[in-house]
Image 1 (cartoon, rainbow, N blue to C red):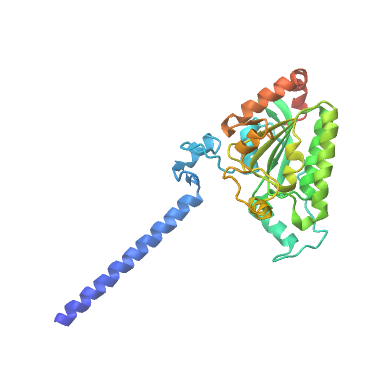
Image 2 (tube, rainbow, N blue to C red):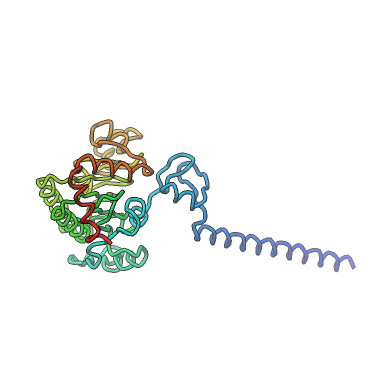
Length: 310
């Protein structure tokens, strides 16, 4: 009798553990589903959990600490461009693999996988749109696509955008987010630095405005070219901006760098930036700057833009 009771008690204990394991498994799956549905967002800076709709309404800036969460190009366009005025350009330009580059994985396979994952053709979206009623040419880099690296397609799309903006007398705004030139395309990627810079010079000679907006991160060949060629250079708070990596510089100099090295605040103190603008004020600030620098052109193009931008 004692053995029977002991055996049944042991079985009950096993059943209890099994039920608890099943409960925790279901709970974990539920939590993962909640996160997957993006109902909540945990701030990487202060660890405060915020309802996703509230966070999006605040332009993906933490309501508690002001941390600027990285956003993709689609969200950036939504934040800056007036509703129903965005007209994308050169969506059919696709990257090739002229060097037949292969490291751990073939470059062509990496491109295909990234396109499926992000829904983008390459690391930049370009187009025309209206910002507070002002027609502009906008390029937005996307860090999700191979670290926002600048290859031939990125260079060509930005070059075509600037050329068309010059023809239409539009101001150009480029939102930068990049790790630099794309190593899988070698010298072809480095050529884009000179190509975009030369096109911007023609835009400048036409006395047209170019504003660059540096977000986290903006580094490498992008920093060494069009990111720093803006007539006005803006940056988001605490964005990492630089050319070579921090560790590379420390190893070269053999000394420890300041904690705020290569931050937007550090660059502003040294005169590399014109202003640091919180994301929630960026659209309004851009509209004011464009209106101040192109007061007459802005008024005249408000009437013609409807035939161009849909």
